[in-house]
Length: 170
Length: 107
Image 1 (cartoon, rainbow over the protein chains, first blue to last red):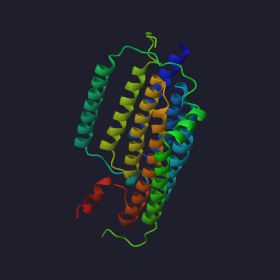
Image 2: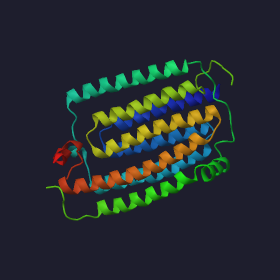
Image 3: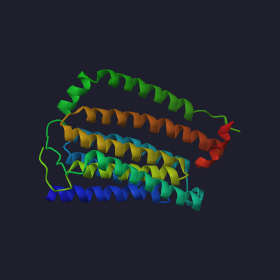
Image 4: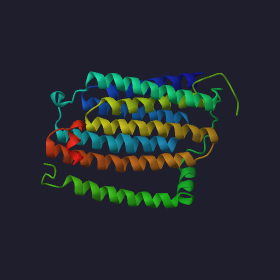
């Protein structure tokens, strides 16, 4: 009982934090709420016995990517006055569109799952570093190497894009 | 696989939670004009998909989906790097991060 209650509470908090990311006016507040969201999602991973991914999520997402976002925000020196305004019509139509998207998603999944409340099995072994490492370096070794090439390409691209001095857009 | 009436640890809970998170991300992409917040909403949608993949990995008892989540995190890191450097370059050129100002990329 307590695990179920804990999962539902954490899920609700995740939804709340994600909503705060979207609706808070200041970008730094958005980044901080996104960090909170990532920590809550990591705790959901732990509740699903995916320990390795929980740690990777905290280190890579909350640690590296969000710090990068914060650095860029502080570099750009944005304030409340420079925050672009959304027109009322766009606000209304996007609320409508995302409501319809949620409706379609829930309806599609409801038909495919038939909502029978199947309990998640308690497998404590598959999320550990040992098993995932065996899988990663055995079956998925080629995508792993390709991802390193992707990282080199993105590193070179980021340096090339950010170091250009002269404006290229008139 | 046993059926029981509790909702919290069932697969449906995670499916609905991931749908709601993905919708919130899409909603943010639609209503926000700031490019940094747009990138953050993309990260939010990627995380919703990750959550669903982990839930089904636990459901089927196989680790393959968790490897996919690992690769999604890798690709998200690369995407955030490139997106932020493009954003810095755009800010240097027009002193704003408003996504609506990029209409001069039409050519």
